[in-house]
Image (cartoon, rainbow, N blue to C red; front, side, top):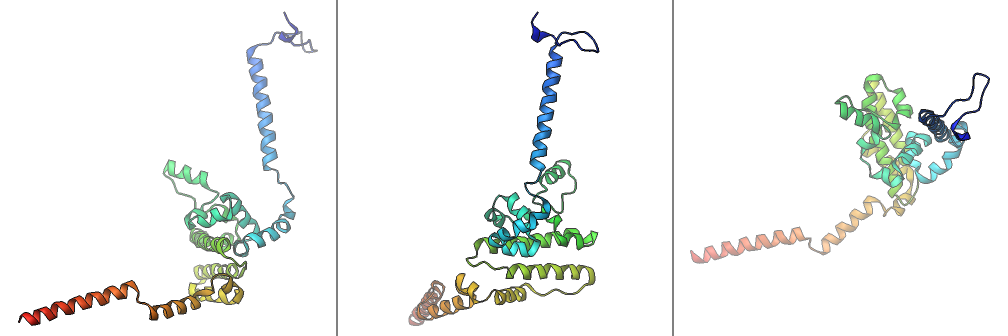
Length: 251
């Protein structure tokens, strides 16, 4: 008999033999303690929550100013983190942005044929809290649509500005008023024109000179050269004239 096969005598009773069940129980307890420690380490924030806004604000203004202006720096940072990058978030459709962070609930609903979730991380936005219970799903779809637009502007623009995010935020607020009071919101084209004016000429120059200059250039080049469509039309008309001329000669 080896010393490793027995436990030392205690006040409660004499020493007893070790069994395989005791080893398995101790191993299970060790695993549970390790899992609890790992879970505590993963869920514990790296910095106090009260310092999170000041920590994220400069980063959000550099990376995604429009998304931060629309939905807030913290929620915007969570969306980007969950997607993996701003480029990945910009590639997602609005329907995916809406339920981003609620994947488990979505797959559970699909498996059990229940109701799919209405929102994921965007639930933490103040707009969802302001909406009436019957309008939460509608405003979450609208907000996800605007978040998708804001993330694409931030990702693919050469000039950083939060003018579009501010106007998109106004649109969401007007949509909330429309749901509650029936006040008609402004049109998308009017809001985007106002955002372009607020962004200034620097934004238009950095992103290709805007839509007006490009249209004039295309029109000028169209006068000098025939487009394929126009050339095809003229060729068809000429062919028809030749056919009619041959018919007249035969008569």
